[in-house]
Length: 301
Image (cartoon, rainbow, N blue to C red; front, top):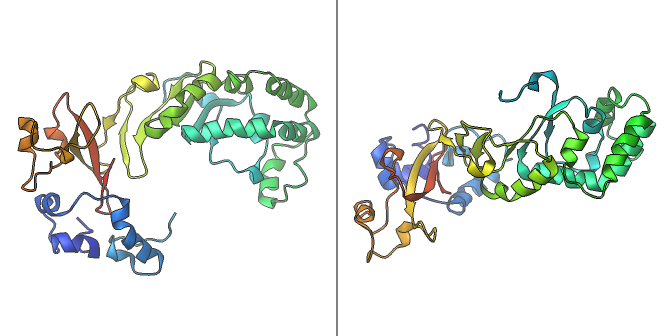
Protein backbone atom coordinates (compact mmCIF):
# COMPACT_ATOMS: atom_id res chain seq x y z
CA UNK A 1 0.00 0.00 0.00
CA UNK A 2 2.11 2.84 -1.34
CA UNK A 3 -0.06 5.53 0.25
CA UNK A 4 0.33 4.24 3.81
CA UNK A 5 2.79 7.02 4.64
CA UNK A 6 0.54 9.88 3.60
CA UNK A 7 -0.75 12.29 6.22
CA UNK A 8 -4.31 11.08 5.79
CA UNK A 9 -3.66 7.34 6.14
CA UNK A 10 -0.90 7.68 8.73
CA UNK A 11 -3.44 8.71 11.35
CA UNK A 12 -5.05 5.29 10.96
CA UNK A 13 -2.21 2.97 9.93
CA UNK A 14 0.86 4.55 11.58
CA UNK A 15 3.04 3.45 8.66
CA UNK A 16 1.86 -0.17 8.59
CA UNK A 17 0.47 -1.83 5.46
CA UNK A 18 -1.45 -4.81 6.78
CA UNK A 19 -4.77 -5.24 4.93
CA UNK A 20 -6.71 -6.36 8.00
CA UNK A 21 -5.45 -3.31 9.90
CA UNK A 22 -6.58 -1.17 6.97
CA UNK A 23 -10.08 -2.68 7.05
CA UNK A 24 -10.30 -2.28 10.81
CA UNK A 25 -8.93 1.24 11.25
CA UNK A 26 -9.62 3.19 8.05
CA UNK A 27 -13.22 4.49 8.07
CA UNK A 28 -15.61 4.51 5.15
CA UNK A 29 -15.80 8.11 4.03
CA UNK A 30 -17.37 10.31 1.39
CA UNK A 31 -15.94 13.12 -0.69
CA UNK A 32 -16.87 15.70 1.96
CA UNK A 33 -14.63 13.92 4.49
CA UNK A 34 -11.49 14.29 2.39
CA UNK A 35 -12.40 17.63 0.79
CA UNK A 36 -10.25 19.58 3.31
CA UNK A 37 -7.19 17.64 2.14
CA UNK A 38 -8.03 18.24 -1.50
CA UNK A 39 -8.51 21.94 -0.81
CA UNK A 40 -5.10 22.12 0.86
CA UNK A 41 -3.45 20.55 -2.20
CA UNK A 42 -5.37 22.89 -4.51
CA UNK A 43 -4.02 25.83 -2.52
CA UNK A 44 -0.40 24.77 -2.90
CA UNK A 45 0.44 22.16 -0.26
CA UNK A 46 2.29 18.99 -1.24
CA UNK A 47 0.09 16.24 -2.61
CA UNK A 48 1.66 13.63 -0.30
CA UNK A 49 -0.75 14.70 2.42
CA UNK A 50 -3.28 12.52 0.58
CA UNK A 51 -1.43 10.30 -1.89
CA UNK A 52 2.08 9.22 -2.72
CA UNK A 53 1.96 10.06 -6.42
CA UNK A 54 2.19 13.75 -7.32
CA UNK A 55 -0.93 15.56 -8.51
CA UNK A 56 -0.20 17.64 -11.60
CA UNK A 57 -3.69 18.95 -12.35
CA UNK A 58 -7.26 18.92 -11.12
CA UNK A 59 -9.40 18.24 -13.53
CA UNK A 60 -16.01 -5.86 -30.80
CA UNK A 61 -16.71 -7.01 -32.24
CA UNK A 62 -20.42 -8.13 -32.39
CA UNK A 63 -21.47 -6.32 -35.56
CA UNK A 64 -20.33 -6.97 -39.12
CA UNK A 65 -18.77 -4.04 -40.91
CA UNK A 66 -17.51 -1.97 -37.98
CA UNK A 67 -14.04 -2.00 -39.53
CA UNK A 68 -15.37 -0.68 -42.83
CA UNK A 69 -16.29 2.80 -41.70
CA UNK A 70 -15.71 5.41 -39.06
CA UNK A 71 -16.68 5.88 -35.44
CA UNK A 72 -18.18 9.25 -34.55
CA UNK A 73 -17.12 10.00 -30.98
CA UNK A 74 -19.22 12.64 -29.26
CA UNK A 75 -17.65 14.68 -26.49
CA UNK A 76 -19.13 17.56 -24.53
CA UNK A 77 -20.49 19.85 -27.20
CA UNK A 78 -20.05 23.59 -26.81
CA UNK A 79 -22.02 26.00 -28.99
CA UNK A 80 -18.95 28.08 -29.80
CA UNK A 81 -17.33 25.08 -31.49
CA UNK A 82 -20.20 23.82 -33.65
CA UNK A 83 -19.17 22.36 -37.02
CA UNK A 84 -20.93 20.07 -39.51
CA UNK A 85 -18.13 17.45 -39.68
CA UNK A 86 -20.27 14.48 -38.55
CA UNK A 87 -22.93 15.37 -41.13
CA UNK A 88 -20.47 15.72 -44.02
CA UNK A 89 -19.30 12.15 -43.54
CA UNK A 90 -22.66 10.70 -42.58
CA UNK A 91 -22.46 7.76 -45.02
CA UNK A 92 -19.10 6.66 -43.56
CA UNK A 93 -20.25 6.44 -39.94
CA UNK A 94 -20.86 2.85 -38.78
CA UNK A 95 -20.74 3.38 -35.03
CA UNK A 96 -21.67 6.28 -32.76
CA UNK A 97 -19.99 6.54 -29.38
CA UNK A 98 -20.19 8.84 -26.39
CA UNK A 99 -18.80 8.32 -22.91
CA UNK A 100 -22.13 8.95 -21.24
CA UNK A 101 -25.67 8.76 -22.58
CA UNK A 102 -26.31 12.35 -21.51
CA UNK A 103 -23.67 13.58 -23.98
CA UNK A 104 -25.42 11.89 -26.88
CA UNK A 105 -28.79 13.32 -25.86
CA UNK A 106 -27.22 16.78 -25.56
CA UNK A 107 -25.74 16.34 -29.03
CA UNK A 108 -29.17 15.63 -30.52
CA UNK A 109 -30.54 18.72 -28.77
CA UNK A 110 -27.56 20.61 -30.17
CA UNK A 111 -28.57 19.53 -33.68
CA UNK A 112 -32.11 20.75 -33.04
CA UNK A 113 -30.76 24.21 -32.25
CA UNK A 114 -28.10 24.55 -34.98
CA UNK A 115 -29.04 22.35 -37.94
CA UNK A 116 -29.98 25.31 -40.13
CA UNK A 117 -26.57 26.91 -39.73
CA UNK A 118 -24.80 23.59 -40.34
CA UNK A 119 -26.80 23.00 -43.53
CA UNK A 120 -25.86 26.50 -44.66
CA UNK A 121 -22.17 25.73 -44.09
CA UNK A 122 -22.48 22.54 -46.13
CA UNK A 123 -24.38 24.31 -48.90
CA UNK A 124 -21.76 27.07 -49.26
CA UNK A 125 -18.67 25.01 -48.43
CA UNK A 126 -17.62 27.56 -45.81
CA UNK A 127 -17.78 27.78 -42.04
CA UNK A 128 -19.73 30.65 -40.53
CA UNK A 129 -17.73 33.89 -40.37
CA UNK A 130 -18.11 34.17 -36.61
CA UNK A 131 -16.02 31.00 -36.16
CA UNK A 132 -12.53 32.51 -36.04
CA UNK A 133 -10.79 29.64 -34.28
CA UNK A 134 -7.83 28.93 -36.57
CA UNK A 135 -7.30 25.36 -35.42
CA UNK A 136 -10.95 24.56 -35.97
CA UNK A 137 -11.02 26.13 -39.43
CA UNK A 138 -7.82 24.33 -40.46
CA UNK A 139 -9.20 21.00 -39.26
CA UNK A 140 -12.41 21.53 -41.23
CA UNK A 141 -10.74 22.75 -44.42
CA UNK A 142 -10.02 19.23 -45.70
CA UNK A 143 -13.57 18.06 -44.95
CA UNK A 144 -15.60 21.12 -45.90
CA UNK A 145 -13.63 21.60 -49.09
CA UNK A 146 -16.36 22.60 -51.54
CA UNK A 147 -20.05 23.55 -51.71
CA UNK A 148 -22.38 20.56 -51.48
CA UNK A 149 -25.96 21.78 -52.00
CA UNK A 150 -27.25 18.26 -52.73
CA UNK A 151 -26.11 16.95 -49.33
CA UNK A 152 -27.42 20.09 -47.63
CA UNK A 153 -30.86 19.53 -49.20
CA UNK A 154 -30.90 15.87 -48.11
CA UNK A 155 -29.99 16.67 -44.52
CA UNK A 156 -32.32 19.65 -44.40
CA UNK A 157 -35.23 17.46 -45.46
CA UNK A 158 -34.47 15.03 -42.61
CA UNK A 159 -34.36 17.81 -40.05
CA UNK A 160 -37.62 19.32 -41.28
CA UNK A 161 -39.52 16.13 -40.44
CA UNK A 162 -41.92 16.81 -37.58
CA UNK A 163 -40.88 13.67 -35.73
CA UNK A 164 -37.31 13.11 -34.60
CA UNK A 165 -37.96 9.44 -33.99
CA UNK A 166 -35.13 7.48 -35.60
CA UNK A 167 -33.16 10.68 -36.33
CA UNK A 168 -29.83 8.93 -35.74
CA UNK A 169 -30.68 6.19 -38.24
CA UNK A 170 -31.87 8.76 -40.78
CA UNK A 171 -28.75 10.92 -40.53
CA UNK A 172 -26.24 8.09 -40.27
CA UNK A 173 -27.95 5.20 -42.12
CA UNK A 174 -25.05 2.74 -41.89
CA UNK A 175 -24.76 2.91 -38.10
CA UNK A 176 -24.54 -0.59 -36.58
CA UNK A 177 -24.66 0.33 -32.90
CA UNK A 178 -24.61 3.12 -30.33
CA UNK A 179 -21.96 2.74 -27.63
CA UNK A 180 -22.55 4.61 -24.38
CA UNK A 181 -22.65 4.20 -20.62
CA UNK A 182 -26.30 3.96 -19.60
CA UNK A 183 -25.89 2.73 -16.03
CA UNK A 184 -26.77 4.55 -12.80
CA UNK A 185 -28.05 8.06 -13.37
CA UNK A 186 -27.52 7.64 -17.13
CA UNK A 187 -30.32 5.06 -17.30
CA UNK A 188 -32.90 7.86 -17.48
CA UNK A 189 -31.74 8.53 -21.06
CA UNK A 190 -32.33 4.99 -22.37
CA UNK A 191 -35.88 5.67 -23.61
CA UNK A 192 -34.75 8.81 -25.45
CA UNK A 193 -31.84 7.02 -27.11
CA UNK A 194 -34.17 4.20 -28.16
CA UNK A 195 -36.46 6.83 -29.69
CA UNK A 196 -33.64 8.66 -31.50
CA UNK A 197 -31.93 5.42 -32.54
CA UNK A 198 -34.91 3.95 -34.36
CA UNK A 199 -33.96 0.36 -33.59
CA UNK A 200 -30.16 0.72 -33.58
CA UNK A 201 -28.78 -1.49 -30.75
CA UNK A 202 -27.77 0.47 -27.66
CA UNK A 203 -24.65 -1.16 -26.24
CA UNK A 204 -23.46 -0.52 -22.69
CA UNK A 205 -20.04 -2.18 -22.38
CA UNK A 206 -18.99 -1.08 -18.91
CA UNK A 207 -20.35 -0.02 -15.54
CA UNK A 208 -18.35 2.91 -14.31
CA UNK A 209 -18.43 5.98 -12.09
CA UNK A 210 -16.13 8.84 -11.20
CA UNK A 211 -14.58 6.65 -8.50
CA UNK A 212 -13.72 3.57 -10.57
CA UNK A 213 -14.73 1.18 -13.31
CA UNK A 214 -16.74 -1.59 -11.69
CA UNK A 215 -17.23 -4.18 -14.39
CA UNK A 216 -17.81 -5.17 -17.98
CA UNK A 217 -20.84 -6.44 -19.81
CA UNK A 218 -20.00 -9.92 -21.14
CA UNK A 219 -23.20 -9.97 -23.15
CA UNK A 220 -23.14 -6.54 -24.79
CA UNK A 221 -26.05 -7.28 -27.13
CA UNK A 222 -28.45 -7.58 -24.22
CA UNK A 223 -30.87 -4.72 -23.68
CA UNK A 224 -29.54 -2.12 -21.20
CA UNK A 225 -32.40 -2.91 -18.85
CA UNK A 226 -31.36 -6.58 -18.82
CA UNK A 227 -27.59 -6.06 -18.73
CA UNK A 228 -25.42 -7.48 -15.96
CA UNK A 229 -21.79 -6.67 -15.29
CA UNK A 230 -18.86 -8.80 -14.15
CA UNK A 231 -16.71 -7.13 -11.49
CA UNK A 232 -13.15 -6.21 -12.49
CA UNK A 233 -11.41 -6.81 -9.19
CA UNK A 234 -8.14 -5.27 -10.37
CA UNK A 235 -9.70 -1.83 -10.89
CA UNK A 236 -10.14 -1.04 -7.17
CA UNK A 237 -10.67 -2.72 -3.82
CA UNK A 238 -14.37 -3.53 -3.57
CA UNK A 239 -16.29 -4.27 -0.39
CA UNK A 240 -20.03 -4.65 0.09
CA UNK A 241 -22.28 -3.13 2.72
CA UNK A 242 -25.61 -4.83 3.39
CA UNK A 243 -28.70 -2.70 2.76
CA UNK A 244 -32.41 -3.22 3.27
CA UNK A 245 -33.70 -4.81 0.08
CA UNK A 246 -37.05 -3.04 0.28
CA UNK A 247 -36.11 0.50 1.31
CA UNK A 248 -32.50 0.71 0.16
CA UNK A 249 -31.56 2.10 3.58
CA UNK A 250 -28.08 1.21 4.75
CA UNK A 251 -28.22 -1.71 7.09
CA UNK A 252 -25.63 -0.08 9.33
CA UNK A 253 -28.35 2.34 10.44
CA UNK A 254 -30.76 -0.40 11.51
CA UNK A 255 -31.69 -0.96 15.10
CA UNK A 256 -30.55 -4.29 16.52
CA UNK A 257 -34.15 -5.32 17.14
CA UNK A 258 -35.31 -7.47 14.27
CA UNK A 259 -31.89 -7.78 12.64
CA UNK A 260 -31.14 -11.14 11.03
CA UNK A 261 -28.54 -13.51 12.46
CA UNK A 262 -26.37 -12.92 9.37
CA UNK A 263 -26.55 -9.16 9.95
CA UNK A 264 -25.62 -9.57 13.61
CA UNK A 265 -22.57 -11.61 12.66
CA UNK A 266 -21.30 -8.72 10.51
CA UNK A 267 -21.76 -6.05 13.18
CA UNK A 268 -18.76 -4.52 14.89
CA UNK A 269 -18.46 -3.63 18.55
CA UNK A 270 -20.21 -0.30 17.94
CA UNK A 271 -23.28 -2.01 16.53
CA UNK A 272 -22.60 -0.97 12.93
CA UNK A 273 -22.42 -3.41 10.05
CA UNK A 274 -18.97 -4.02 8.61
CA UNK A 275 -18.53 -4.26 4.83
CA UNK A 276 -17.68 -7.73 3.52
CA UNK A 277 -15.42 -8.95 0.73
CA UNK A 278 -16.86 -10.32 -2.50
CA UNK A 279 -16.32 -13.89 -1.32
CA UNK A 280 -18.67 -13.27 1.62
CA UNK A 281 -21.50 -11.72 -0.37
CA UNK A 282 -24.70 -13.71 0.09
CA UNK A 283 -26.97 -14.64 -2.81
CA UNK A 284 -30.32 -12.88 -2.59
CA UNK A 285 -29.06 -9.98 -0.44
CA UNK A 286 -28.71 -6.34 -1.55
CA UNK A 287 -25.48 -4.41 -1.02
CA UNK A 288 -23.99 -1.00 -1.61
CA UNK A 289 -20.47 -1.05 -3.00
CA UNK A 290 -17.64 0.44 -0.96
CA UNK A 291 -14.76 1.43 -3.23
CA UNK A 292 -11.20 1.90 -2.09
CA UNK A 293 -9.21 3.45 -4.92
CA UNK A 294 -5.46 3.61 -5.42
CA UNK A 295 -5.29 6.80 -3.36
CA UNK A 296 -6.58 4.94 -0.34
CA UNK A 297 -9.98 6.54 0.14
CA UNK A 298 -13.30 4.81 0.59
CA UNK A 299 -16.41 5.89 -1.29
CA UNK A 300 -19.89 4.62 -0.62
CA UNK A 301 -21.89 4.18 -3.84
